[in-house]
Image (cartoon, rainbow, N blue to C red):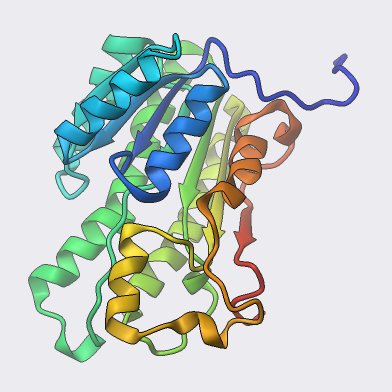
Length: 257
């Protein structure tokens, strides 16, 4: 193999990327970043109006985009979203499993319907979406990149009232590790990013419940979503050809090791 020196490129021309939870927060940022590098963008979330606005924005830059309404708690609907993305933009070669919800309750106070919803969205959805994208890539004989968005809470939990969220994100890390082993032979890399506390709509809700947690962080700040750009692009670019089954923590030193 003859790779250029250095083996780094952020040119995603010819790739089709599906980002879940693309209507707000980190997913919105991820979609804009991938589009800026030339990837055709399949934008998936529940709030179709927001997705349409983002798709229009991306199209003005000369990049193809499609808005796909998807509720990550609906497994069959999630599988159909992959087919819709392929029909609109071609085979999905990059999947960003970003959709997720917090539990926002003490474990012993959680109703069963909330338990089910957290598990469905945070664990089942990334698993079944990854499998559907991989099936199509394997059938086409194409390599691909899957990036799961975990959380620093997968490794550290301070009892802030998000026990199941922490458990679900630990499951995302293990999903990443196991699927990477299964699909390495097909050229499908599966990795994860574990962000710490980053500014987002979800974090706004957390801060309203627990107060300004930043004062216990060493740098006393929330992360800026732009600080995740380089990690995201690394995991979908040629630079990470030999990296699969790993989870990169990007937490600004906020949490213990």
